[in-house]
Length: 215
Image 1 (cartoon, rainbow, N blue to C red):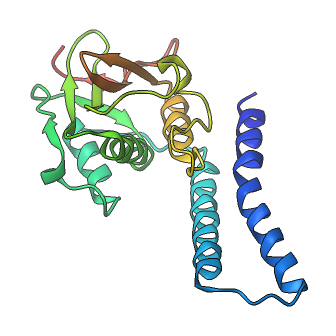
Image 2: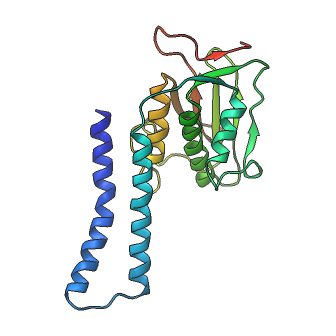
């Protein structure tokens, strides 16, 4: 089911570049020269396809190597993995209680957090950030003060969903896949003028707790 949804999304998103390449090919076939705008459009579509290929290679990874990490370390991995992310652009409050550790594949969860933070920065009106929430189901909450979802919050976690017309929707797909591979949950909500994505570090059914430390 997930594979079918992803395939449908990819088919839809690939149609744009295919249409552009077909149009350019037809113009060249008629002997019409390309202008600077045509060249820029081709370059943009090629960059998009290259980005999609990179994301798909990331999606091909299934095996997990679980080690224990603090919430702050996972967030630092996310920040370090994207040139668009920096602590001075985000409001960060991830001071989890002493001793809290999350058993996870840090590279995959770091990538998931990177996608959530990138989305928050893109969607914000003025502010975006992340905070640690302690409780029965501890989580990292990524938030922004933008206008909110273009669709129902419950639909935002589906494979391939994007709220940006020019995007492939693979960023959130990667985040959802990485989270679900661990048995964790990704929840979206709209609260008091903020869009919030909560990465809940819950244990797989019948498995060991994924967080250790203060409760």
